[in-house]
Length: 315
Image 1: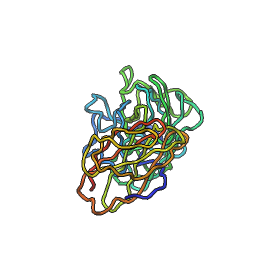
Image 2 (image 1 turned 120 degrees about the horizontal axis):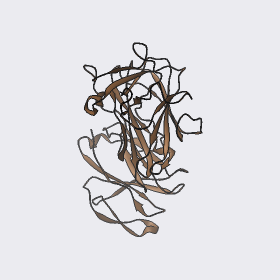
Image 3 (image 1 turned 90 degrees about the vertical axis):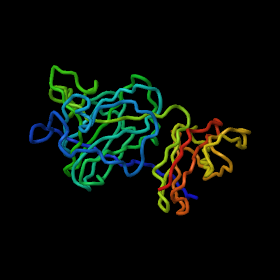
Image 4 (image 1 turned 90 degrees about the horizontal axis):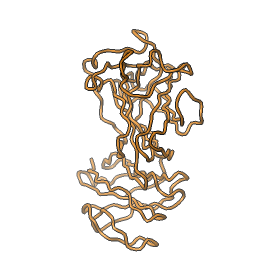
C-alpha cells in the first residue's frame, strides 16, 4: 500500500522573530484585527494531549487580553520559556503567523529557561504557505524530547527578514500576562515590561508508542509516524478496512495480542525505530480508497505494546 523510507517531519510551522513596538514592530490591540482567522493545517496535526496554552492573537479577545504581533528579522533571536505540565514526550507545537507566502523561518528547542545557549535538541525551518494568517504545526516527535512536570524548555525563533509576523498577546504591567513564563530578546531579561507573550500550543504524547498520521488523500503520499517506541527495535504498522476491532492476532515472540482493528488485519511495514524511539513510514495512498475509512495501529515488538488506534477517512 505504501513504500518507505523514513521521514523526519517539520510539518506546517510558522514563526516569528523581532518585535519592536508601536508601528515599527510589535503591536498590541484590544481585540483581533478584522478578518483575522486561523487557517486549517495542510499537513500534519497533533494527536497527543494539549499541554501548554499561550493564546494566539486570534484567541486574545476570548482570553480577555490584548492581541499582539511580532515582526520577523534575521538579526533578532527570540526565546520563549515553556513549562511542561505533564510527563511525556513533546509531540510538537503550534504557532500562528501572518505575512507573505514564501517567507522562511527557523525554529529551535533548547532545554532550560531563557536566556540560554544550551545545545539545540530540535530544529526546523519552514516556508510560509499562504499570504494570510495561518497556524503552523511543528512536529518534534522525532527528537524524543522526554519531559517531566515542571521542567522548563524554550522555543527559539529567528526570521530571515522576509516579512513574517507571529502572533501572541500583551498585558501591560501590573497586569498578569496571558502565560506565566516570559519571552526574551537576547540575554537582557524578560522583554520590555515582561507583559508580552508569543502564542503557542504544545502537545505531549503519553509514554509508550504513539501513532500519528498526516492527512490521507487518495493517490497522494501520506506519512505514519510513531514516537515513544523502544529505541533501535522493530515497530510494525498495521491496518484494517473493516473496522475498529478488537481482534486477536499473532505477533511473533509476543504471542497472541489484541489490536483495535477488525479482521482481516494487514501489515504495511515493519521498520526499526531510531535511537530516540521514533520511526516513520511514507508512501502513496491507493486511489481506490477515496472516501473510505481506514483503521490504523502500530505495534512495538520489543515491549509487545500496541499504540493508540487511528480511524482516518481518505480524502
